[in-house]
Every structure is written in structure tokens, then in C-alpha cells.
Length: 289
Length: 270
Image 1: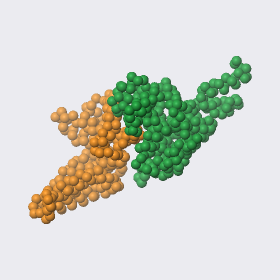
Image 2: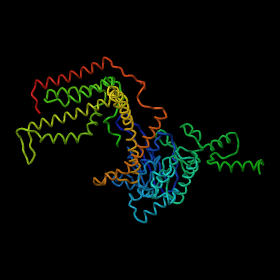
Image 3: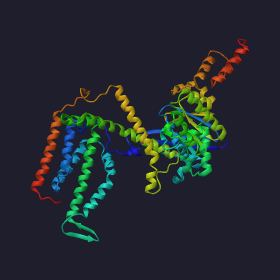
Image 4: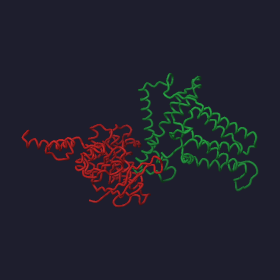
């Protein structure tokens, strides 16, 4: 394993030299391994969005470096566009960025900018459409005729089609219905499994993060609060409570059971896990069989 | 960033200019702008400049923001002053090809430059110290007599305040869209004129779509609150004229008088 993204002493200050000056990211260092699935959590205004926008060069850090495969992305400012193809970024509510006359063309926009043409472009577009579950007949429609969820998936496909090595998703499931969330999340997981690339998922839903992330990056007041495996971060319920975040509901229930002396592991992350642990326990005690 | 534009912005504050009644301020502003264009010699121009400096000083806004608002029109000022420089009549003091420099032209250039700068500074003074709501309230109140001839005063004022309300929102949205399209590799910084115009399409189309969406939302929200035009509506904030406002208007009248006297007594240079 090698670090694909590395961040060294990164800081960003908004409105430098004005009365509105505000530190959004403060002296942050971390490194992300190739193929990892990282969950990014933190309060609104904790600096998550600023951090991820610096990772693909959309905003330039006030101090510090972002290294992609060991090279500072700002070493050649003229080539910053190349970085954006390698580190794909899906913003919040990405459906508002659709503009082409067909879904196909819109998905192809980024990939064509990257320089793909002909069969390679077609393969990239259809591949991305397949990952996000857009049927072939939708591709020839106008993006403005799609439903909300379909628009969202088309916009995400537009970034996936650039075949980035690192994909950053800023709250991709916000505002979708429970079914839509579930589907989109498993599509992202499948994409990650098949492509084996690196994913950073910013989310407010601890349940989503618990299900998919290998490691969790916790931001608090512009600083890195924690960056550790999902189990270990969610085992620290009290520490998360202190900064106004919470662990997934099922994890909390299991932690409370543990406090009352029930013999369950400290960090259960999903309902399925909890179910198997609890039924094993009940079987052992002979309450069910 | 698009948000760096300071022209037309409002800075909340408590300075003398902030506290003047918006109706009085608007009237004084209109009079001031008109009189800027009735300066024909350096004495009257000097009066205007002195008044302008005084206004900027008492507005309580850092001069930096005034410079920022001037930056936007720098090109316009340069072009018009250079054009005027060679457009004067009278005896040439320097001549080359079709360019003919005259004293009259130099005066014209100075006057047009100072006038435009004062115009922008005066409008900045007004918008920096008056909130959009106050401004449209004042406008609606001042135009009220026109309602007698079935001029839709309230509707126009409402449209204006809605439009002003959405300027920052749309700017922010433009910013977001630019970031999103840049993330998809849109190239907005290089290429020739046509390439650059074409590169705006991915920004403008979504921007228009969302502007329409917002317009429909606002219309629905207004109907939900039973909005049905201006007749019979009362106001939460009722404007009051005070001694301060009368003094401001008298000062403006004196300035106009001063400019007229200067024009009458001294010869005009342009």
C-alpha cells in the first residue's frame, strides 16, 4: 500500500486581511492510502468542504501542501486541471450543474475535457451510467426531464466517467428518500469494489459512514479531531459526543447494553452485525434456539 | 471570485449617512448626480469634489471599498478620457496622424474623468449606507403620486426589491457552479474570445434554470401568504423625516446654488 493523497500542514484562511477573516482549515496533516474508503464527518462549518476542495486544487491552500502520488499539486499551477481529472469531486446537490441537451452528453462533458474521444469516451460514459444504474433509454433524454434522484445519479456519473483515481463525494445522498439513499450508497460501494480506487465520502449520516468506510476522518473547528479505523472512531462515543457528533444508533444501543453488563463487543456498526451478535448470545443462554 | 465586487453592496452601520432618511437621501443623490453634469469650470468642479470627499468621510466606510468600486469602471474611465483628450476644439498644441491634442480636449478629459468618478462614488455612498429594502421603500414612497395615473408603483418597487434580494444569492450560485464545472475539467481561463464565451455555457444554463426555479418558488410562497399587491398594505417600518434630513436637503440645495453661482460668475472652460 502506498499513500495516494498526502496532506502536510495544510491551512486555509477565508477573507484574509478583512474583518471577516476566518480559519477554515488549521494546520492539518494526514495521508490516504490507495484503495481506501474514507468517511469524512464533522459539523457544518468544521472545514470538511474546504478541506476536500483543496484536495483537487479547486482552492489553493494558504499554507501547506497537497501531495498526489508524492508530487505537490501546485508545483505547476498551469497543470492544475490534470489534477482535477485524477481527483474527481462531486459537490453537494450536483444535479444543479447539469446543462447539456442529453444526459449522455452531460456525462461525457468531464471525460471529453480530459481528452477522451471515440470508443474510449463511449465506454467511459456507458460504464459510469451502469455504475449509477441509469438505463440506456435515459441517456438520450434531456437531463431536465429526469426525476430528482436520476438527475443526482447522472451528475455523479459525470464525474465517475472521468475515471478519477480518487473520488470525493460531498453528501451524495442528501435530500434523497431512504430507498434512493440505500441504492446510491450501494452503487458507490460497488463502484469502489470494481474499480479499486480511493473514495472520500463526506456525510452527516453516521449510519451510512459506518456501513461503508474503512477509516473515518473527523473534523472539528478547522482541526483534525481524529483519523482512525471506523471501529475505533465509533468506539469513542464520549469523545464524539463532546464535539456534538454521535455514533450510529445501533452502536449506541450496543454500547449502552455493554455498560449494563451484557457481553457484546464495543463497536458494532450495523444492524446486521448487532443481530448476529445478539442472537448468538441468546442462543448461548438458551433463550432461543 | 465573483463575490469580490463591492459595487452595490450594503454595509450596515450607524454613521450620519446611514441615519438619514432614505427618501431624503435618494432625493439628494438624484440632485447631486444631476448637478455633477452641470459643472463647467474648475471652481464648480472643485465644489463637487469637496462635497464628495466630505460624503465619503462621513459615510464611515473604509476608503478601500470605494477604491474597489472604482476598479470596476477603470477601463470605462480610461477609454472615455482618452477619447475626449483628442476630441476638443480650438488650437492644436500637438498633432500626430489623426490625433489632435488641444487645451479644450485636456479640460474635457479632466472633467469627464472627475465626473464619472464622482458619479460612481456617489452611487457607492448611497448603496453602501442604504439597505436595499430602505431604498425600494423610499422609491415606492417617492413615486406614490404616479399611482394616480395608474402607474404600477408598488409592483415596480416589489420587483426591484426582489431583484436586489437575489443578487447575492445568484452570485453565490455562480461561484458554486464555476467550482463544480471546473471540477469536471471546464477550462475558463485560457483560449480566445469565442472559446471563453462558449465556456460560459455550462455556467449560464444551470444558472438560468435555477433562477426560474427560484422565481416560481417565490411566487408560490407569496401566494401562500396571500400576497395580493400593495393596496391596503401597512408597513412595519414607517419612515420619518427629521431635522437631520431637512438639513441634508438644505446642504444639497446650497451645493446646487454654489455650482450655479460659480457657473454664472466664471467663464466655462469646456
